[in-house]
View 1 (spheres, rainbow, N blue to C red):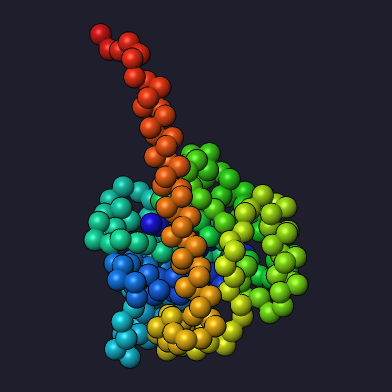
View 2 (cartoon, rainbow, N blue to C red; view 1 turned 45 degrees about the horizontal axis):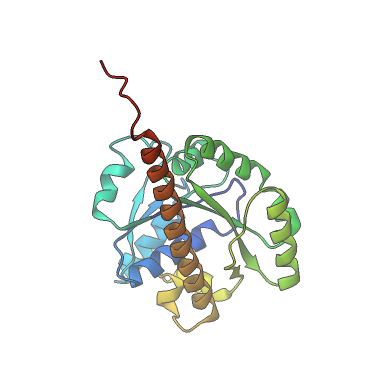
Length: 236
């Protein structure tokens, strides 16, 4: 599966989620490519720190607004099972490129309704991509949550602007920052922590969604194939 962590708003936890998801996939013996599409290079720096400390992390490459062009990301992915794309804020052209290759778009959102209201432009980008790629799945992810009541408000606000929300949530925990500073994903840094439990629940949910999406896409393709059976050929 190809997962894009996207959204026009900065500070929503995209890099933290991307690193956590990619690391957990790696620990499940998946071959994982982590694409750092952010010019700031947070994920590349994280990978460099891991290398200096002799720690194992997913393969990290830098790509930008051309990743969807044939011969770019598609050529690299042949050696991997999964790909996680860490998108930058504000760079709409990079996010559009990621949405053109992703199976699943995840939009992290802070816990307040105001954070959710700021996601309108991001949801519009996703809806534009769905016109071309109707099987693209897109979900909000409540992140950096401190209080459950506030998180519920953001969840309702996201649904109100047309974005379904994942059941999994990532709370604001110091362990995430500590894991990033050590060049690790949270499920590798502290496997027994509540933060690690949240990331594992998130990855479980992503697997379930992509399986469901693949099944729906297969059913649609089968119906189209059946509908064309028996039609006279238009070829000369």
